[in-house]
Image (tube, rainbow, N blue to C red; front, side, top):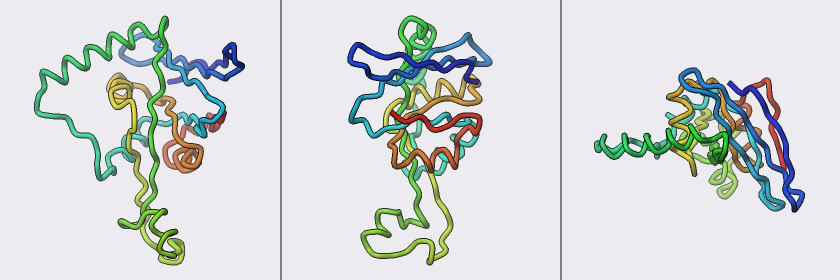
Length: 173
């Protein structure tokens, strides 16, 4: 659960968004997003359950290797990082929110001239994680009910519609 969102500005007058999250299994953790002038990115607060369901639909979804020892070691490192997030806030994960229609993506429909609305195909929206897989695993497994992620501005509305926490708005640079 997000308990606080604050804004700070750097020397170059760039916006930083700072988030404080209360997790059920640990203390509060701190995350940040640094907007750059040309970022074309947005921040969406997502609900964990909705987010996870869309992540499960990713045809290329991340799967854990059978090497549990390596995973455990990696998870201990991320646990230490989150424990010290007050001094050094964690960067938000970057995700893609993709809408395809039974293997016909929006891009393909545009390229080949199909109007997906006229075709009346099932919505196959899914999420894949571009950067920050371990952060999201940590947040979900430690009981975060909602958490912030970054995405492209073009995908922000769809991500908010499908997994967004309606108490918050989409945050643009």
